[in-house]
Length: 224
Image 1: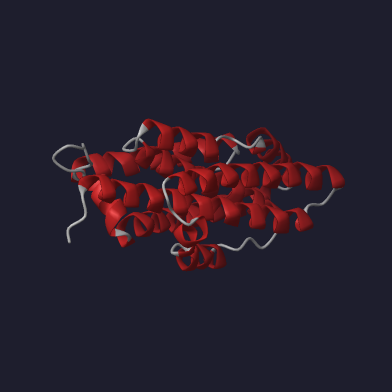
Image 2 (image 1 turned 90 degrees about the vertical axis):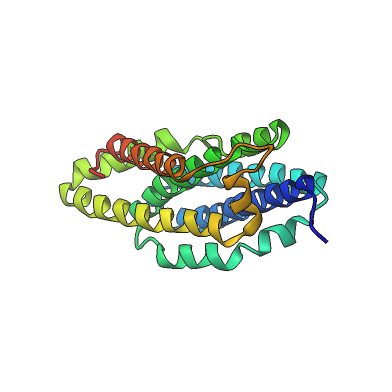
């Protein structure tokens, strides 16, 4: 039996929420690991606070998934292999690479999800936008990275290359998340009663994502 438009939409919303929720869980776990590489107690506390904020965001998403009649764990599970593969390919080798990944990689993912959230109902959109709010990491990471580059100028070149790699991997991940799930693809394409993205609009979206990435790199004192 063909699913109704409302059911198609519900499944798309569940997919998007599941993807973001698993991303938040991954971010929480990753930040806990990053804290182990932090050079001082102050940094460990700051990263711990960031991890706590990510877990708070996760709980909001889990709540909304339950409201939509989904099993939150099942909704997240379908994205586990894809996300875990991404993180395995982009595992930081030191503290600074971990900071860049938290700032650049997570920032790009957040930008992508905000773009898609524009096609959702107001309540779900608000949950998603609030879950993507800055956890206070921006100022802390920018300060630490800039200070590190000031002490060792060679660090800047290495981190710039790392940032470019993260950009490529993250865009591939974003396209995979959107393309591998039929409901999400349908959400982006739209329908008779819902606007969607044509190829030109999709191209403009990825242009905006690239421009925001360039701005983040510049804020860190790095070339994109």
